[in-house]
Length: 402
Ligand code: ATP
Ligand code: MG
Image 1: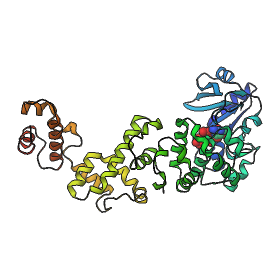
Image 2: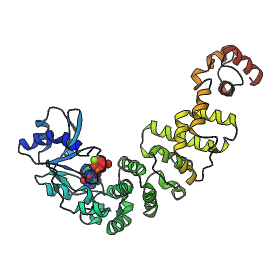
Image 3: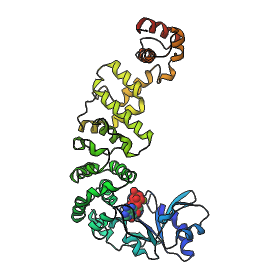
Image 4: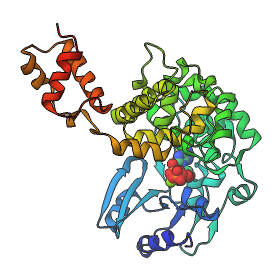
């Protein structure tokens, strides 16, 4: 399918703006990806209409970033980010501008954008407006800032990370002047909000060309300026293939030191929990040397996590993490072992804490946790059936109860 389709679907939105006398263009990543014949993610538009004017023209709008000029328009179930042409006021502390001013001129809008490849506009007839030779840089596969790189990175140091993110996604090289400015100003990223950094880092890690970009991160000493990472021996971590943020964090966590919390990265609890579980599994892998240990591993970590670990094999190898032989640990054995489990979670165990406390007429205490875990393992290992009476007898005979 031609990658024109998403733009064609958006034309009525543009039409609505131009019917009312406003200019409107496609811009940013969508135009870049269209010219590169890559799949289009989201369609960004830029317009001379102010946010209030955009809101007045459409029935269904969401004022997602109205103070920065962005209104989301929902049109036939699709979502379009429409941003008013704007310039940016003075930058303070190398982060977001202190004020934005809306203007009626496309040139002033693209001039404040980060890279030439992201500063190309396209009108409703697919005519390109390219003030900064972005198409030439796409051809040459170069990432280059719009105008002076020092000035642009001084304004907003996030652009340094964004440039590296585009390198990782597109496999482009970074123009030498742009790269020198990155080197000179890398330390400014310590002023940025960690949430913005993590958005770029997550995209960077998933990029097809991440292996090369990952060396640039070390080369530029990026980790030294980021919370959490700066306390860890990041030079010992190798990234050879695209990976998700939790997968990366799991590898990083294997070098975790006390007193340094991943909470500083301000990611969701779910994501951190997932990374922790992956990390535990990675640390457990070298001990999985028998059939019963393998069975226990598949039970303890679950099928999905095991399959994810399989996906990470080349990464684990690159980081010298001992693995289970591929003869033992593969998709088929994970599936077979999972299918053969009597129980797949503790909830399915025929006893629980309450039943054990009654059976032994004892209050809760450390013994209970121990007894439950050992009973669970005995059922997983098929030493006993998952039956209330049998489990109680087994606990009587095998677990020391104070
Ligand atoms: P993606 O495919 O990930 O959406 P994108 O290039 O569209 O990539 P966005 O973060 O969606 O990236 O930003 C949209 C556009 O806004 C960019 O292409 C660029 O023109 C501009 N832009 C975004 N962030 C900045 C920034 N920090 N400084 C200058 N311009 C920026
Ligand atoms: Mg975008």
